[in-house]
Image (cartoon, rainbow, N blue to C red; front, side, top):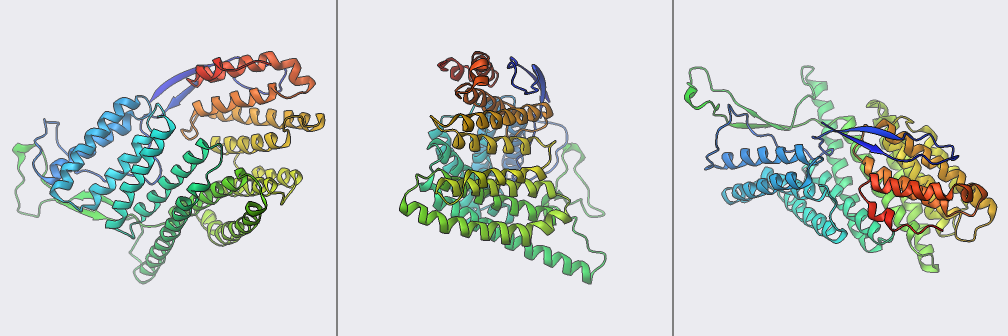
Amino acid sequence: MTKVTYNFMQAEDDGVDFPQSINIVIPLYHMPPRFPPKSAKKKGKAKEPVLETYDDFFDEAVLQEEKGERWKVSDGPKAGRFLARALELYDQCLRLRPNDFDTTYNVARIHFLLTQLPPTPPTQQLIAGLQRAIESHKTALALSPENIDALFNTAQVSIELVETVTEANDGRGGEAVPVLEEAIQLLQRCYQTQEQELRNTAADEATDPTANGDDMDTDIPIAPSAGEESNEENDEVETERATVKYATTPSTLLDTCLAMLHAYTVYLSIIASAPPSASSTAGAVSTIQNIMTSANEDLILTKAAPLAQQSEREPDLALARANLLTTAAAASVAHGLATLTDWQAALSQYDTTNPKDAEALCDRADALIAYARTASPLGAPAEAQQQAWTVYTQAAGLLGAAVKLATFTQPTPLEVWITRAEVDLARARLDTEVSRRNRGVLFQNAKVFYKNAGRGDLGDAIVEV
């Protein structure tokens, strides 16, 4: 673990309880959900490896991959070197077994991890890396078309690409929609496969009361048979590998539902950012209706709700639903299909989310910020600007609470500081009495927030008005 202290100035008279400094403990080894590496066989005491066989190269590659994982938060370049070495070793594995799924799967996983290392690369480099990761995942998927992890991960990387492209284009991601639609189809296939596995498990348990669902998809050593001698001089147990499969549970099935809901939410955000026109609005009406039928009525009410209850994860589903419904409201307002009052009402969906979950707090803050920006365009009436001040201040408070929790990596604390800076800039540029009174402090705070996020260049570029 590593501890980082962030310091910043407190805005005056803004009603936001935000700490002046905070110690954030960041885990040095945190695996993204559903991107597990395949396990290597256990070794004895460390030796300089002599790599000759497939197993030799594979085990050493996994070791290098795990080292990269441990450094990926605190030292991105160092983690990258370990991961690059792992790729070289996996390449040797593929020379020996050209169509090996485990190796191909791990190569794809590393290509994705390389895009997530700090510092964040330039946008076009990040997009190229994600495209390469998608190609690698599709190669793995071609080797095992019904593999649940390959289906899920290919979809997740595709969604990540769409979000990156959309953000780079100021919310406009129409050209990435086919990639997003393919990701949704992959998640639907994943869900169907998992659902069938869950049924099969239930049927097996019904016919065999001793059966259980504790299987794991990992490599385990097979001990020598009775009477066989082990090589004690070699301090390494010679093993064969047997793969045992993770059982599908209501919780893992819910993960896939939540991923689909997120994909639909991204789709709606693209619609919300598309310039309104007669043709785009006509298409938006149909698409929003189809998404809400597929996502809210079928996916949430019919499938996800019972799974969330079984796995005791109702707050996770509540957050996904709130994000979906508020983004749908934003898309509807953008195309004249709803009013700001409708959007404001949709924001109340966050009342059912967990107030002590950093991700929920940040998502709610983002939704409020999007609403405030739309409700207070340049030259908006004084009443609208005053309401925007109130909404922005509420968002700032949520971000402050999120940082105090300091138990999350996505979004990262640094990303929260950047959003916090943007909120103070937005408040400073409103034409209200309270904004004018606090303008100087708000601009100074924004600079400090950017500096704490490692983006002092953004703070230096602020033009005070």
